[in-house]
Length: 84
Image (cartoon, rainbow, N blue to C red; front, side, top):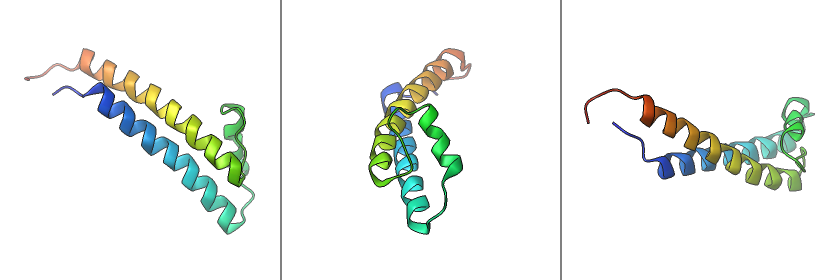
């Protein structure tokens, strides 16, 4: 079985972007400090645990998930040994 690289990377991008967005919203709604989630600002330029920062995290998370998903699917397709 081979992965469809475009579909898999797009799915990973959507899931990771929404995960960052929704987890930021959750931290803001419950009123927690968000220290752990705030460490994403070291990797995602412009991100902060705020309402606006959540959308910056959505964009960065989408791009990050897209790239990692594509790399994973490419490696899986290259290294998979099986019947097709």
